[in-house]
Structures are given as structure tokens and as C-alpha cells.
Image 1 (spheres, helix red, strand yellow):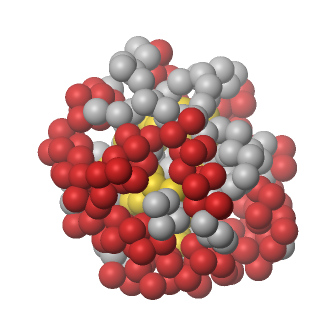
Image 2 (tube, one colour; image 1 turned 135 degrees about the vertical axis):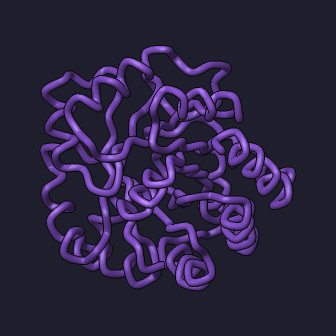
Length: 261
């Protein structure tokens, strides 16, 4: 657990490996299953694990992840419960936990308090999809001091000068959103992603993870071939976890890992 998210990426780069980053929603179907799923994803070769904090108005999420967050909230899953879970499980994992949360829960707790709490629990990265670049400074500076790396998102519609500004501010890795719209499974990856990856490479040497819409081993392999440093898979995991349980999630993770090897 000593390494930072960016150091983890550097190790993978040194071995010419591509990071596999599964996403699951904390508390769906319940917190005990989330804990088992985190361990299973770690066993199956996840490089980092993105853990979604359930939120009532998840703007960036598609129907699968929205429904998971709603189910978790209906069961009374709170931020404190998620942090207790992370504190319990993270010492057992070799994969770092990156928390995915909207800005409101951070604001409610107070930025520095929130960052200290998630660091103490064992998280090492943070994704906040609804905080624009212009307002990021309030989070980035204290995060750097505390030891949390904040990942920023780049969309297919982001203009080049803004991409440059985002890449400069980003910590950990850059999250390249592969589609215009919300998360969810798609049959194919837009070829525009290959151009976006090349464009990003001209402005930054920071690692780039691609997510939103990735749902099969073939798509993961395609993204690696196009030069992605990491592949983020969310809805496809969340969809498997509720009905199929931990074993199905572990098997799927292994298939993705094999495709990226």
C-alpha cells in the first residue's frame, strides 16, 4: 500500500503493462459483498480499483451504475460506512483504491477533513466528475499535501487548450472519457478514442486511463493497442455483481486481465 497511484502506473509502464481498473459501487448489493468483491478483483489482477460512493444525483453515471447507487442508498449506505469498509479491506489489497464521488459529499464534510479521512481509510486516489477545472484548485492543493492524487476527466468534446490545462493539473492519471454522454456498456469503442489518445500524448507524458463504455476483453485489448496506459471498466462489473455475485466478477476480471497481458 506504500506506493502512490502514479507510482503504480510507472511500475506498469516499466513492464510495458496496461493497468486494469474495475469500478464497483460501494454497498451494492451490500457492504459485505463489496468487501468480498474488492478482494476478488485484487486476486484477479486489478491494478487499481475504483470504488463509487453512492450518491443521489449521479450526473455522469448511466442507468446501471445509477440503479446500483440508488439500491445502496436505499439500504442506508453512508460515506462513513464506505470509509469503514475501505479501512477494513485496503490493507489486504495490492491494488490501490481510487474513490469516485461527486463534490457535494466532499463539501459537506469539508475538503481537508474529507481528504484526511479517505487517506486514513486507505484510499490513494480520487475522481470527482462534477467539479470543473476552474474550481479544482480548492481540492488539488490540499490533496497533494495529504497524499491523495486527484484524477481529472477529459471528454471527446474537450477543446485542445483545455486538455492542456487539465493534463497539467491532473494527478495520478488522466481519465479519458471514451464517449460523449454517461457511463454504460457499448458494443464498440469509438475510433475517435485513438485520435484523442494521440492528441493527449502530444501535450502530456502522464498516464492515461480510458473509461465509459468499455465492456469486453476485446475492447480492453483494442484500447491497449491504441496506447492507453489503463482501461477502466464499470457498468459491466456492476451489472455482474448484483445477480452473479463475486465469482462472476472475479472471472470477468481475469478475462480482462488476460486480454491485457
